[in-house]
Amino acid sequence: MDEAEAFYRALGKQTVRLRREVTGHIVNRLQAALWREAVHLVAEGYASVADVDLVVTEGLGARWAVCGPHQIFHLSGGDQGMAGFIDRLGPAVHSWWADLGSPQLDEATCRTLIEGMAQATGGRSYAELARARDEQVIALLATRRQARELSQD
Image (cartoon, rainbow, N blue to C red):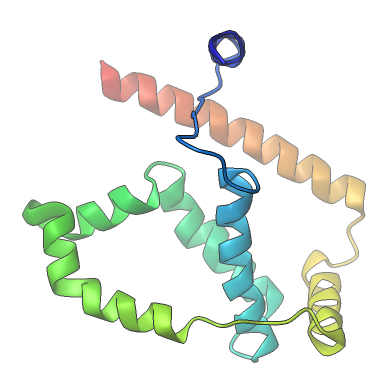
């Protein structure tokens, strides 16, 4: 574990050691939880595939690029931090949790997702989409590193 961690850190990567085993990688589990609600919102007609992706990339993703979910809510609590957030907004979040969807990838939902992605991608090929994603992620990570270095000065 120490060697693997040293290797990835030498490449400029951040590492996390799990405290105990869990099925799937932490990133994949969190991604699956978000996608579950994204599928629900699309399947129930609340928003289009493109709209859900837009609110993630332009809202949530921007915040998550600099703060994790716990820190975002800690900051939402003002001077009282997480305690203030839980006191003021915890009941509202709890009610949202109760209302989260449990979509099924049935035929109708799959068709809606596939057609929605076809519209959202506007005919761009897999290669074009992957290249754009990779270029943007690399640029974002470089900017993130620079910002982290500036904040440490």
